[in-house]
Length: 315
Image (cartoon, rainbow, N blue to C red):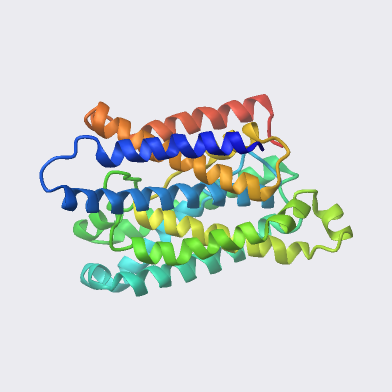
């Protein structure tokens, strides 16, 4: 892609960031800026994590209609949260230090994701799209049903804690989880970019990739491991985000058709950041929080998913 395109995209993102940080700045500016800066960092981290995780997952599945959320990653995270709450109780769950809690959740999530989705996608990729989507939807339903069952066995106060992490909230990202999420997500992003050339080979299909010397199974598991890390980081900060990744991955492929994975990963991260920061600025400054950004994103993403499915644009 041309340097001018990257420059224009970077300038647009910088403009939106400046508007969001400095517009309406009054009172104790230092305190307000520090709060906005933390929120901005969380939104940027969530955007990059979701965008890159979706591109990685679509490369593993060899299909552009699948996302981690559609395949049940977010539901798996909620199940892990519910089980942890049931095991530790409200006091133990709430008082558990953010660092150990986040690292334990990440380890469990990554292990389960690699075990479940590695078996599903590692052999044939996403060539049988109907079977792959159906399997992912069934797994998602199973995880959500498990989380609901565990929640119903809890008392109402504990159930309220589970519900608080069940929906995306871009207005109040978790500040205490930000540092730990960055500690997990940033190395995962760097690893994804480093694996870019191997992802390019994997995208050729299992047979071609193996003939070129790629250890296909190991590459699938490595990519799914990174997807799990990025998904946990994003979900821990704002909650489950179902369709943001589908939108930005589709835009990235549309703006850079046939591009290498390093380009696609970077472009998806920047587009997601522009969408989240710009959208949050519009809803906070222009609409006075009379609507919710997550609802708009989910609605638009759902329409895009149905459109892609009906038109058969699954490759």
